[in-house]
Image (cartoon, rainbow, N blue to C red; front, side, top):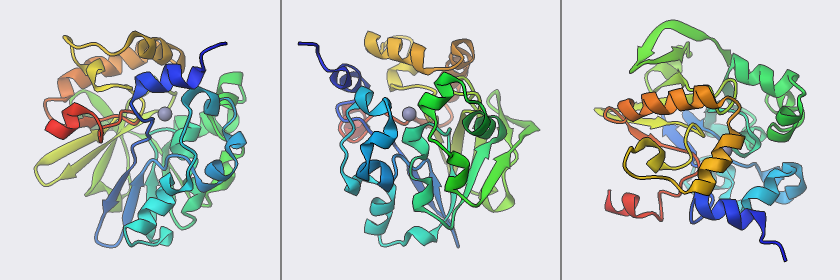
Length: 256
Ligand SMILES: [Zn+2]
């Protein structure tokens, strides 16, 4: 019998495959960074296409961001803004669970997900994605912005006090990172720019199978390597969080 692909990859990505989303509370706003899978994905996993065979997701609705936000005592309608690192299905599937939110995405990512019908874009992006929100805010580069060698995007003023959006293209054409300032601390959500924290270390290595997976998952490996090179320097200035590492059950989180 063949070993199941999900165990091969998911086991190396993390003890549990997760998609780390962040919820930021503003004075009159709730900002969600990435949505993870959506309710409709949990109810009908076939919507995920081939992706569901690779990762072996735990298809329980309670993991949906909408439910987790309700468990915190908020209404899904309280979410005013969604910032996506990119539009892969596992990061954007829940957009339509928050009908009042404006979705902020880089121009290149939106165009790749909605108008490029190459085989790879059909595999990675949800169908008819543009219909999932009535309010898209398409982000253009702000050439004057620089944070530790990363260019940034022009974000609306109401988001600016909480976060910056950085250009981390490589995993996808318009992949972005979200830099969050909380008092003196900085947190940088790098989406799928890396899959494992060891990718930013020169002395510790991520599992080889994961490196192989990364090679096929990134659209432009040269650009993705360039991002990693700059993230290694930037990690002195911000805590770095990637989407699919299980920080809750790994030693570095418990000890950190
Ligand atoms: Zn992902």
